[in-house]
Length: 217
Length: 217
DNA sequence: GTCTATAGAACGATAGAC
DNA sequence: GTCTATCGTTCTATAGAC
Image (tube, rainbow over all chains, first blue to last red; front, top):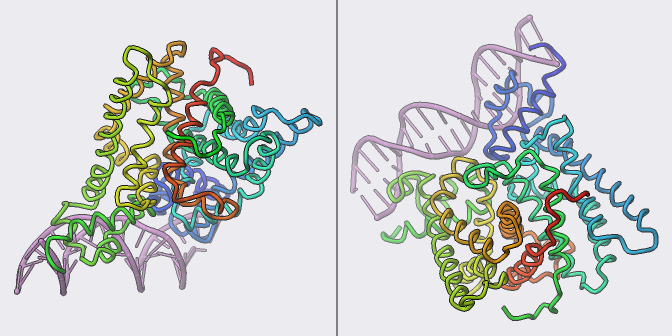
């Protein structure tokens, strides 16, 4: 193969395989074959299988989290001294995912799937990714949410944010399967529409009346 | 080992390994060692790795779906000719998971994690499980939701149910990680409390105002 | 019904030529 | 920077003794 493009082709193939089969299910043999190269290239460019997949995650996640912080800051500016609108907070958390998925013009559903993988990855890989990429963003959004919903105990805010993140990650992981069977009318390629729907769903959920934690069934 | 209990010990170990590492990440060597037996036992009792893990899923999922159908029918009876309360529909979908997790007295978080795995399993395994265990239940709940929310287009009902299921599966997959870092105050063992919170969150989300699908950001 | 032993293939990683 | 060849390990599955 001509030199200089192997690294990018490896990352591209890694996204495909990692999205479809996760860390454990991804074979470096298949991956390098799909990238038109060989096993040795992985070690030369990245050092190991794990380092390749971590680098892929870094490349994809970091720009999203940068967008999130910028959109959150913009929402703060817009609100001035008033409380930030809940819709703007969750827009800042959700919409950058769509921006990243659409970066090459048409929607990259493989990337969505890869993002959805994170949640059920094995603990070692998960822990490394979360502590590397997410603590600052999560704390920023949590404290903004606490400020916006003063009536809600911090524990309840954390639960609801947890549900919101779960819904996002699950929706991403499942998005490619929404087209099958009875859901064919759903517009798969309208990632932005999906995220807007999800934002509205989650904002309403976040505003659910708080029963004090001891309500009966 | 004494005869007659190997099959059960294999299923128990399978739950642990499948929950932690998924299908691809589960090794029959480690699993059979943890079960105090050997590789040959898997083929004798189940036929293959895949058959063992599918059987585990069947044993866990089928009772939940049976509970769901019974609770949905009970909610129908309770409502009579009036529309069923949204809270009762999602209680019927969510709470049986907790009942299954608590079946041995104290909460079985491993089972929750296993259930959360489903969503990002490789397509072959996923497809087989979903078409084997879920189509009837999903259609029953979807048509009940359509009946309960007459103002909402069926496509929108499907999207919101999709988000609700995603939130459930994601919350299950992540539940064991909620104890770490800043969330230590959250009561991990209160699975029923978590599901009640999630039910309220999702019901509020499902009632989000419908903008007609073309609302701006 | 349970075991040991092993077949046969696939795995990640690396040495060394070019 | 890219390749071939191969090392040492681990994988699932199975044959056959008890």
